[in-house]
Image (cartoon, rainbow, N blue to C red; front, top):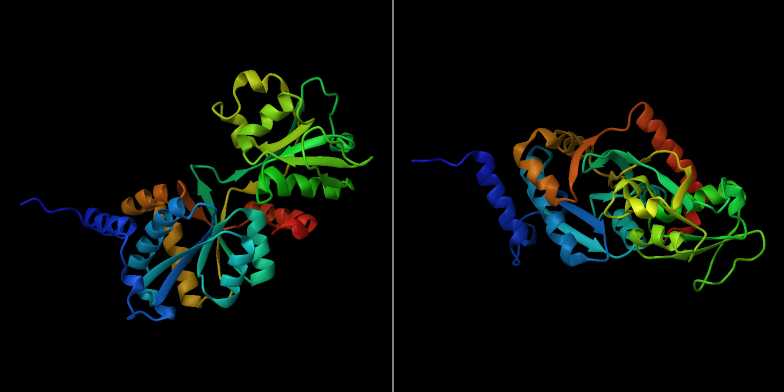
Length: 312
């Protein structure tokens, strides 16, 4: 008689948790808060987010028994401010975030950055500033009296990092109400496109004079077709930014922190975990911040200081 491999049986169990609309083991009264791992996320789309979190939480629950974990839960909130309160109160144990938001959680909720999170094989990326090929703009100081397109207020590469670069170069930036408006003299005006796919098109069409996006979207021909790239120039790139990071609440038990760290790092070598990582935002691996990566993270933190007031 054919016997399923252990990882296949475990995968089926995890998928049952992910797909179930009813109560999970985490809803039963037998597990205390200390025995329950809570994975959180900031998202505007809970319907898509919850299954992804449940896949990760269910997997970790099966691997953290040695640290006293017997159950798992997930929480989705819509703003960084809400997540800060959950981390500060101890209601969330683990959260993945972009670098700028991560430093907000460190500062305001005493969270701890645990590991770097690779997505689709990418560990780091850059924010790039683009202009029309014949704009004459070749340096950031020349953006004064012009208008730049940003993605949205929570985007690290499409808003916060380029805003930090403007601030660090002594350039004031003013949000405009609509295309066609001009900024106060000596300042940069900015507009949100609410989607990175629109930024290059806005610049090419002359809706804005410049735009900010990341180098991955620039290189992706489905997002920035070659015909569009031919009309544009990159005139500045930011320092390297971690693609994503994992944080834990500051008062996490040492044994749970260590077990969680080791489990996440080991996931890339676990056949079942690879499938879980695909569900969980296409993550490919986790690794620690050491050497150059630690220096890169410290550099991002310095840029965070320039825009901390703009984080919601």
